Amino acid sequence: MFESLTEKFNAVFKSLSGRGRITEANVSDAMRDVRKALLEADVSYNVVKKFCKDVSEAAIGAEVIKSLHPGQLLIKIVNDELTKLMGPVDSNIYFVSPGPTVIMLAGLQGCGKTTTAAKLGKYLVAKGKRPLLVADDLQRPAAIEQLIILGQQADIDVYSEDSKNSVKVAKRAVTHAQKNGYDVVVLDTAGRLHIDEDMMTEISNVAKAVEPHQIYLVCDSMTGQDAVNSAKEFNERLELDGVILTKLDGDARGGAALSVKAVTGKPIKFIGVGEKLDKLEEFHPDRMAGRILGMGDVVTLVEKAQEQFDAEEAEKLQRKMAKGSFGFDDFLKQTKAIKKMGGMKDMLKMMPGLGGKLGDMDFDDGQLKQIEAIAHSMTPRERREPDIIDSSRRRRIAAGSGTQPNDVSGLVKTFRRSRDMMKALSGGSFGGLKSLFSGGFNMDTLTAAMSAGRKIKQRSKRKRKIIRRGKIKRR
Image (tube, rainbow, N blue to C red; front, side, top):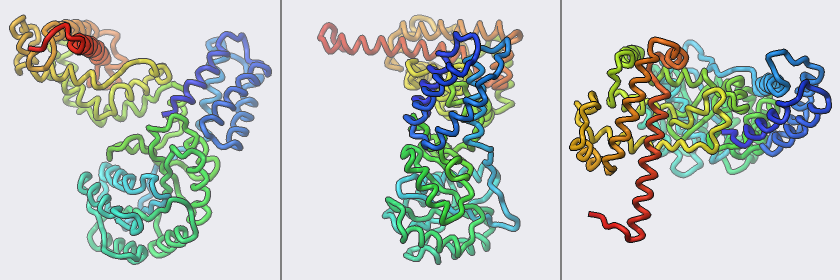
């Protein structure tokens, strides 16, 4: 997300890096580029105007600390202003007692309301709640069936009726939740392709009937200013409590995320960053500002790592690393956790200093599949003790994984070097990443594996080209 905006911001900061101090002239030049970048990102004009004015006022005359260059100081100022623009932090759902807490989702058709309802339900389950999803979108064909299927995937109960009266369905659903001990009711309401009076009347009637404790507007971030404009319209009729931005992983511009809070005055509660039901994140303005500026998002990265890596398992892994007994089974566990965290490239984007520099780097998670194929073609003993893999074993493993014996040999050699490095560093200065992931992740091993995977892939491509040219025949 925000790749385009990140690149443009980095270019602006780089242009200031050689300056001795910040002056009104170079701030003005920088703001011209920032203004252009924000407008191209589909940020509201009034928001851009105020943002650039605030940054300029904070930057002009600011003294450059000895340890900072003008470009670094401007990064800090822009980061602070971006955080203010999208903040404050308000990702809490306010639950009532006695329950159930009623949350109503509103939005246009196609914005991802139904999927978001299921994602929100899964998020609530992780928080220890017992939610009930309510299929109250009675306008869109198959909306009820979609929510039922999503509810089954998330193992969450769904309330539905064969009815055309959305008000009655909503009221009976809340009554059902009260009688059956549900903590939260999540109402998936009907949308339209555009805002019209019939739509607003229907959703207003549902809100009056059930008096939801929270009303969240679901917006498709890829529609840019249209998302912000629809948020403004809905807020005037419903008095929103917050906004959920969907499809943010596919939005390289980020205009909606930067505009919606300033235009509506309502906080962004959550962001959808993928199609899977676990791809709903709490929105933190400071973390998002860091991602936009290419500064990474270590806090979110650590939280994701802690969700995937069991503390006891991580401690065992750390002991293995210290002894140099780290095997391919341990590596496979790591790659599985990496996939659950969103993949290698998504993780590296959150690392400080790497966020805006991965555009041309070839981190194809498919490369890991070939590494996994080789590892899965090994016997349990070979995965535990890679040193026993001799030439005959290499040939058998290569045949089983669809690779060449020298690919297996290269991977084993790379793995040994990484294992030896981990053993040497485990008790020394490797405390940074080691403490960050509690021993559950090692960048050296995975980066080396990715490199080996690229080599295997390149060899496979070359071999396919030769075969197509007719120079060799397949056996």
